[in-house]
Length: 165
Image (cartoon, rainbow, N blue to C red):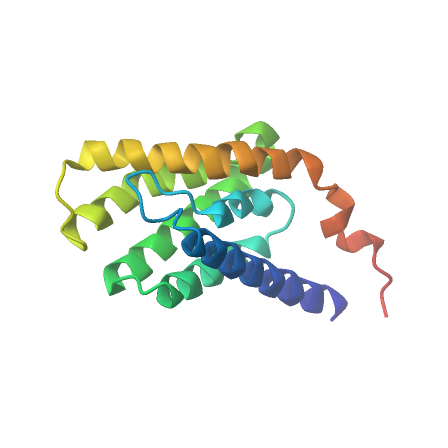
């Protein structure tokens, strides 16, 4: 029972952090330019530490997209991109820690440009949007996420250190 509670708590905290960091990015207009910097994307490396980050990131992204007024295709496909990235991080990160940021960068670089083009009808070519999304993801997930990955102690997510009751 304790492990299930820990899982739900970790997922909820990660979802809440994702929402707060997304709203901070929006408040400072970091998501309004050609290259968008969603600081919350740094959290996409957390599935390396715990599988609870997978639903936490998905729900956090879904709620964030709803709160910032994203169009329905963005809410759906943007959240699915985060889910795919989180699952990829969980599996790839277990093999090579240093590649943990790669799946979310790849998932968003492929999916989000299509959302920008076809949901928002943004003028421009999909390859250009892929480049701008990649730059934002590289900075937020690749750089900030990697800093997080190497500074967060593993024991913070380790359920084995909790007493069983």
